[in-house]
Length: 101
Image 1 (cartoon, rainbow, N blue to C red):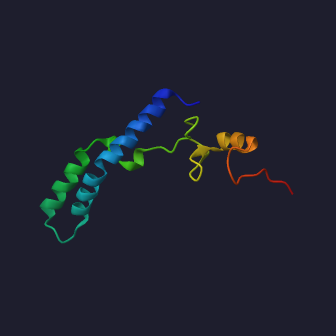
Image 2: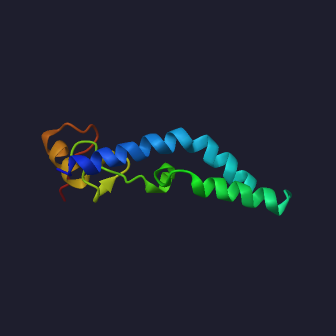
Image 3: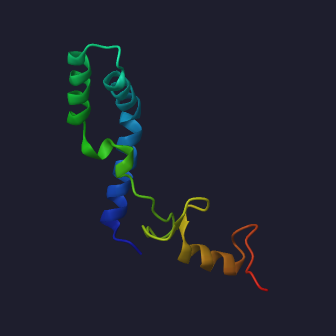
């Protein structure tokens, strides 16, 4: 089980990324637009850098829904390999069977 503080910090990052998503996209589009004057593009880049650091979507860490484990994460199931194996062995994950050959 991961530390509660790490899990809560990640949840906060998810909320911030969602809140600032539209504003970040607008500022990025202005900063990348080659047709605009350089002063306007630099101003957009400065506003983008003044935004909260945790509002960037790359700061969000994929974590297991059950345990909060950050490594060995399967995106398809949104859980770690360990939690997935336990649930699959119990028959709780539909369509997943133990392999044998």
